[in-house]
Length: 146
Image (tube, rainbow, N blue to C red; front, side):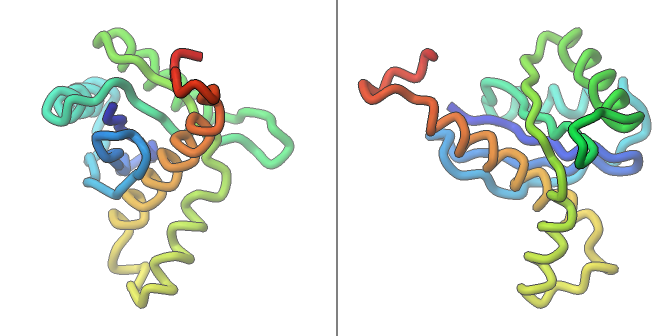
């Protein structure tokens, strides 16, 4: 079961895809964010093209667990996606952009020249966290219908 991961931002939305088995997330692309409608249509097209079961959308929370303006923006975008008939789940995305920058820096990638790549890697980190958490919830008999 393939999933699509999103790192929502004001200018760009990072995209990641899982492998067909739903175990490994990989950076995929970036959507230029010019509004909820066009971005939601672009996401819906990616879901269809890649046969994704649903979307894992990063939810930015403050370190004290409270949701601010950006989390409200993300929840609003999720509602637009749901109106397109898409299933959306949330994953805490605290510090994923920083983790993505650190990983790229360690790989020798100049961050200033690759903001879109940071968004893609952040989306992959969000999706991988979801996949890891979901795999730990699968019962011993292997039936994933929790």
